[in-house]
Image (cartoon, rainbow, N blue to C red; front, side, top):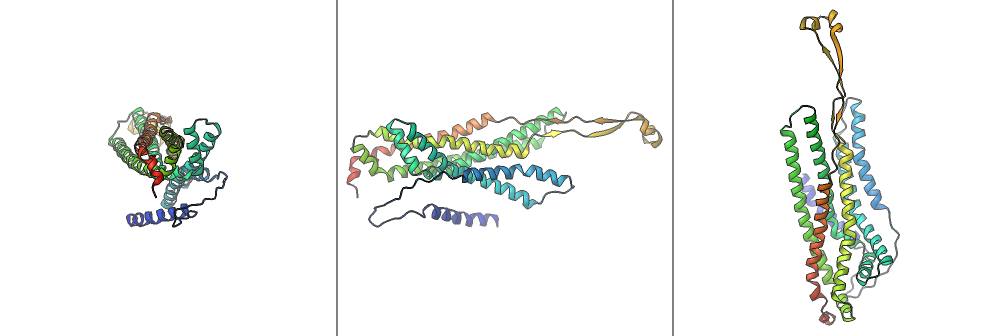
Length: 341
């Protein structure tokens, strides 16, 4: 049932999202388009969605403790709703936030840049800031999930360290969890490769769609290398802060949800006499003492190395897609394109 819902629901969601993004697009039979330029203010939807996602994850711990004081368990639907709803809200917020980042980056480049390549990239980013979010959606989703997996791995490693400090032996359970996280990391790497392929298609399609404009720029004296650098700026300028945002949003829920593993903090009675004196109610209290087990807690390490590899891999994927897209720029900037119908 769940598989059928995903199989049927994804095309519906994709169609609705496409209809929403194309609601203001008009296609004429002569290929002439007239657009109305409007300076729209920055909307806070991305920050609100990310905040709602983080609040949903952070509320799971207090809810579990509130039910624990009443010797009950929280309903499964409540926990599932918070996990699923919080994850989707954070993911959509990151993807939508890429459009905001692209717009702000374009405004900053337009204000402070002096080179032709950066000025061209700034014009593209401010005119269509959502192009980056549509192309980076899958890549950012993989980065966000990878950051969450890195946080969970740090928690499992801290739990194993706590067991060793408590005199226990690291068992198969910890190995199972870490092996599972290896599989998750592999799935994230595969997803990033697939997302990089989508980026290549989007970038090449953009170069092909704007070949007449690029050819006109070359005909007026703009070097093709300047256009290539502008494409690189347009891809990398929003990608770097967007990847950093995805890493942060992906890591924070796991840190707040799992916290630091701990053990101890309870009291126990120990009788120092023989069995006869300890079992006799008249003498047991005389030889019984109370031991307090100290609370031991291990704070999970911040997986900076894992996050660095994940972020650098995402940026490297963008660089590779830019390099592949620039291979099509030579043919796309030919002057003959101006005579194409």
